[in-house]
Image 1 (cartoon, rainbow, N blue to C red):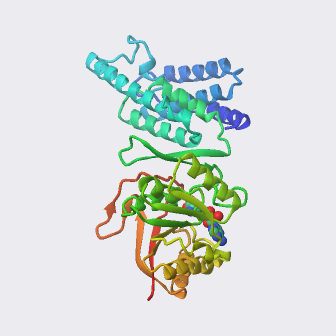
Image 2 (spheres, rainbow, N blue to C red):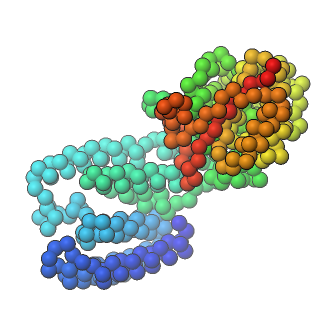
Amino acid sequence: MNTVSQRVRVIQLYRQILKLGRNWKSKEEGRTEIEKSEILAEARLKFRENRDISDPIEIGKLIYKAEQRIVQADHYGIPYERPEYLPPDTAYSVHSVKQNFQRMSRKHAQVFSDVIVSSPLLDQYKIRKQFQASILKRIITKFEKCGEFVPDEIYDKLGSLMGEKDEEYVERVYFNKNGDQVLFSIEESVNQLSKGTTGLSIWQASCDLANLCQYLPLENKTIIELGAGCGLSGISISANFPSSTVYLTDYNDDVLQILEKNVKKNNLKNCECRSIDWCNFDSKEWLNSNPDLLIAADVVYDTELLPSLCRTISWFLETFPKSCALIACTLRNPESLKCFEKNILKFNMEIVEKISFENSIFDIGDGIEVLTTFPFSSTIQTPTIFYSLGLVR
Ligand SMILES: C[S@@+](CC[C@H](N)C(=O)[O-])C[C@H]1O[C@@H](n2cnc3c(N)ncnc32)[C@H](O)[C@@H]1O
């Protein structure tokens, strides 16, 4: 949030709290008028006390605290600060069993908070602040739902994240299947469209394709990725199968630069970046490539490009008879997929298998649920359709 929107939010909150105070109905008989006047008095006092604070991080923390207090008041009918912060002899003092439980839960929550808030990965990688904040919000909600103590560090971290802005380029960190080791990281732009291309950020289809590929037998295989963008799918194969050879291709110079950077920083020796423009494909350069598998993610969106894309895939399948192709498409517009299917047939290929993947479940038989090590969160919920392609012989 910038300073102007922070100021607007503070005013909104002040109004909201005053309204809440005026309409307050206490859960305890006979206390409505007392609590009403205490809410209004506290609101006026706090806003006056904090009027001169200008540090956006400090303001972010206070905004978040106020939002939490409103939720607590609305939801639980408690107009005062949370009991954890009050001295033991106040009105909210609890019995000893509960106190013991809270002490244990505090210790547990503290360890949890230390691991998350003080993770060295946060210094090592430029993890998007918006993602960090949304994870902390989820944790707070979960803790509060179970009546768990939320350590102050989590609120503090969230407050400071809300006052900060991401740089143009951030990093996503991916873990191995056990979740105990960083497998690789990928740099991407925070903007889905940047420098006139969509290739500088990671798209859902490439995460889903990376997920699927980790279950394929790709040891000692050669893989070519078309329209690789930041390279997530191909890089995941290269990292998961060190005996494979992976060619990451794209046609845009800025995209090829970030692709190269992502390969270098992960020290991947079995991975090479090269240029392929489907609309201007120079097949001579690929006569010795001998691929087993061609992959591509989120390349079916512009119907004008589909003949060139399909012609390129078809050339590989025809030239290397043992090869096949796996294309992951995000289902945005069914018409684009229909047009893709027409072009598949037009260029002498067939759909060997078509599988839909949504909410970590493949629609095969009763549905196979897989462990998602390449998560993607989007405001639009839409499945990924995988096309497995072969040549009609
Ligand atoms: C939506 S992005 C997908 C990037 C990546 N596969 C992913 O899913 O994160 C589409 C990609 O196709 C590439 N592309 C578009 N037209 C192309 C062409 N004619 N030849 C090669 N690549 C192309 C773009 O540069 C971009 O990287």
